[in-house]
Amino acid sequence: MIKKILISACLLLSLVSFAQEGTASPYSFYGIGDVRFRGTLENRSMGEIVIEQDSIHMNLQNPASFANLKLTTFTLGGTYATTKLKTDAESSNARRSTLDYLAIGLPLGKFGVGFGLIPYSSVGYKISSVSEDPAQNNRRFNGSGGLNKAFFGVGYKIVPNFSIGADVNYNFGKIETNNFEYITDISIGTRELNKVDLSGVNFNLGMMYQTKINKKISFFSSLNYSLESTLKAENTRNIATALYNSNFDLAIVDVLDDVKTEKNLKIPSKYSAQAGFGEARKWLVGIGYTFQEAGSLNNNYNSLDNVSYEKHSKYSIGGYYIPNYNSFSNYAKRITYRGGFRFENTGLVIHSEPIEDMALTLGVGLPLTGTFSNVNIGLEFGKRGTTAAKLVEENYANVSVSFSLNDRWFEKRKFN
Image (tube, rainbow, N blue to C red; front, top):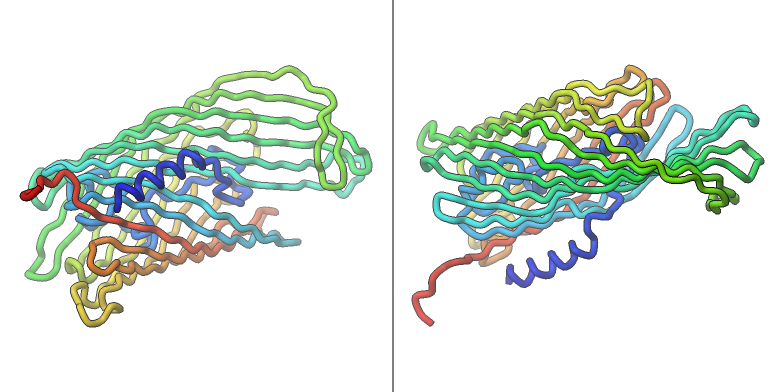
């Protein structure tokens, strides 16, 4: 069954090609867009805690986890996001549906491999800047696109409770921005169109360790390090004169020649450390800290004097609880209940205001009877940004669904 689902999912992705508008945040104008969590819904529902050496669920953050898989695992997740954006003067609502990840893990004895596709960042905004002076220029901005990752990782179990791993990521994507400048009551303006093709490679290293404290309780830990990498940005800028109507539909009337440039963007190194305690298949509680240096992500279309980048940091806490994982008479006792909280300094500073993001996460894992597979449902309620310094505050509520399906591959049959 999993093979048929895998083929169908790959065909779906070949059609979608991650060409989705995965965010409605005006903060996605900056850098390479709104950077998304690299992980499954199971981990996201626990405040992004990823410390357990799980044998039937994939851990996309730490490649060392692949060595712990006992079954071939296929995972696919998506999110329906609603966001209320507000300033001191007004507010609006936005909705988005996104495909979050597709990945496959294969157990190979002491080794394990994982590969898949993940949207790394998303750009999606529509901003209007209208001057109170009718003689001054007004502006309308919109952008779309983002950066994706195709990854391949290998994990190796050195001893039963200690594993290491590494993965390589090919980063690719396109960002398109449109800036239209006009004067009120004059039906002609100037359009600036920027297209950026992004590509590059980066590497991720990880290790996981666990040990028994007593007969029931274990200690879990995870360390992860992403090396600094370079993104090649091939930029194309086009300036044109355009007519517009009341709906701001543009009719291009005069186009200048394209201007092409190249620039290298720097994605800084990132460190992540997590630890916690728990009883296998019963409960788990963990905390985590992530640190990332300031990046060099300014390009010719998003460089502004009032914007800077600082060090990024994130604090997480979360866990799960299973009343009785092998109960035959009560399905509710086999459900995994998850929860967590995270606080993040995104590293983006606008008008001297650091942009922060915090969220409460909840979720359940619903086992499919007779299998190790499950369906996961997650909720996330959070706030990003501020209304200070004429900025935008985002209050969001996300509903996510994922599938974690397991099967046995490469198993020699005893009977034909």
